[in-house]
Amino acid sequence: MTLLPDPAEARAARLACRQGAPRPTAGMAPGFTQCNMISLPKDWAWDFLLYAQRNPKPCPVLDVTDPGSHRTALAPKADLRTDIPLYRIWRDGVLAEETPDATAAWAEHPDLVTFLIGCSFTFETPLQQAGIEVRHIAQGCNVPMFLTDRDCRPAGRLHGKMVVSMRPIPAGRVAEAAMISGRTPAVHGAPVHIGAPEALGIADLSRPDFGDPVQIRPGEVPVFWACGVTPQAALMASKPPFAITHAPGYMFITDVPDTHWQV
Amino acid sequence: MTLLPDPAEARAARLACRQGAPRPTAGMAPGFTQCNMISLPKDWAWDFLLYAQRNPKPCPVLDVTDPGSHRTALAPKADLRTDIPLYRIWRDGVLAEETPDATAAWAEHPDLVTFLIGCSFTFETPLQQAGIEVRHIAQGCNVPMFLTDRDCRPAGRLHGKMVVSMRPIPAGRVAEAAMISGRTPAVHGAPVHIGAPEALGIADLSRPDFGDPVQIRPGEVPVFWACGVTPQAALMASKPPFAITHAPGYMFITDVPDTHWQV
Image (cartoon, rainbow over all chains, first blue to last red; front, side):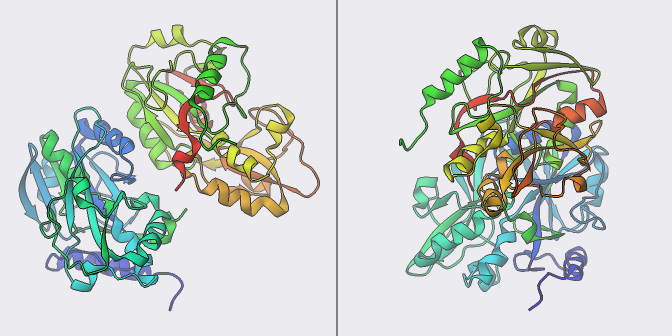
């Protein structure tokens, strides 16, 4: 094994995201931080940054661009308009379009402020290194995500429920999965909920609100982590006039090793 | 011993801060989170929240008020205008006044946005519980703080150097002090620098830029933590027209147990 992840792998993965057919990024460029993205007109930037500060478990902000910029310190040579496999364009809180290239949408608003938010895919590498299978990677599909009944703390014009991602974990490894993910609070950290999906307002684990369902085997417990799709739930509830986001599970791959976020 | 800190102690400490002669708050209401404070006109709030996001070690934001509000979720019955022992009023980046009551200054600007920022006093309780002496508490003085030569990452109109607090720790306990404080990244977390003060641009440990000097005994190493006085260094460097802050070492005592921030 090598001690450090190879930055060329992150660059190659971004190039594949830019040029190839869109597919979820879980398991791509292992060892590198992945991010959720949301771009909003500058007039909404304060409300969103405050929303993130007030809801740090689902919305841990890793970088904020200058207005109109499509560059980030997390991957200096990347282009935020093209390097995510699949984007969503939102108008008045409604998903208007999905596209692999957001350049045209970006050009509609010259003052977009872009927020990059930690993603739980980042701690899937240490989970796997500990021998804990990540089911959606094993099944080659997207992670299942659910809208919960938990209100986020509102900020200005923004409000909405928390979204969670779910991974089934063998009962004997749940505590370890909690501790491993807990070491990286900047990418959602420890689970927000272990077992008892009904207590989160989740009626049916086989019907996720975002992503794909995964198999839950006997002896496994559904473990729920706060999810960076939470801002998209806020878009739907709060209806800002315009936004660009990643599509759930189709993340921005950065140049930052996941070990950077360990406390 | 009792398992949980008594909220009445936090309230009593705030009352003493409001009514008594100003004194540093280190060691007061042990077990409760203490905060740095900075209030800025709304026009500067975005720049500051972004500055904090880009410099999370010195500026971990624990709460942001609505414009004009002197209330915080961290201590719902407290009044941010009076419950800090000593305030500083800043005009054009210059310290204009120190006062135990900021009510009049607050009234000058109806749209102040107030940021409460984690304070390293919060992890002094677990340090002491581990048998590590906190020298400025033992000496009954303020913690020594130093302006370093390290630039913070700028944001909008705000720029400045990082400020650190210093505690001398016996060489055999330094690693433990790093690990204990590292468990609470929201209150500055692990040290940013251990030993070698000259490599931080600190020429003389006996002459702190803020607070009081403390004794360093043979076999002890100076340990430096990122400090919530860093925003005051940004005020001096960036010269916004108006600001209110706490005086270094004279903190806001909240109702939140320090264990709340453990990861």
